[in-house]
Length: 182
Image (cartoon, rainbow, N blue to C red; front, side, top):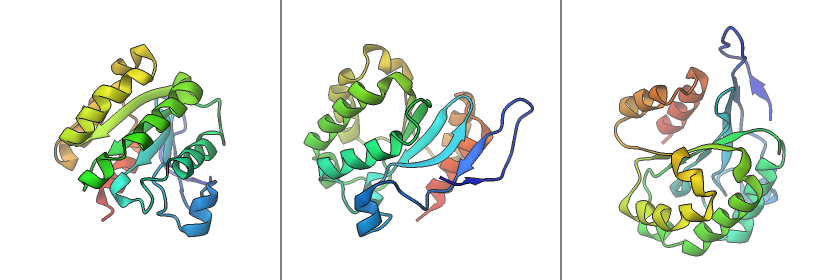
């Protein structure tokens, strides 16, 4: 993925990344909105920041295609840490009823990618998401609960909560950019 110039700190360069080119064959064939699991930034503390908004994805039920997308995305740099921002905006019952997808993805992540997972940030979780997290999170590393943050509120409240978590400004701005997309 191409880096876009932006801020840097005194000791680390923080990269915001463009998401124009997906390594997913399904997204290349059917369009960029087929899945929602895209790198939006890189920061020293949080690694690759991956953003998901299931309600904005055209395909939220094909567990094989979604697993392929995640694998292709994370395998581009398998040694780098990553953080997952899961945006529950406009999430409907049809999205949260995909329990087989949730279990499949949690198994994939726990067996192949959990070691480098820095944090899971769930934005404005719904009661359905809370239930899924309660039952799926144990499939990750047992200590993964300490890496989970549920942030609720306005964009400003989420911004301030991300600052309190120690996220670098470029990472926060990339998340805020996603929240502004309608």
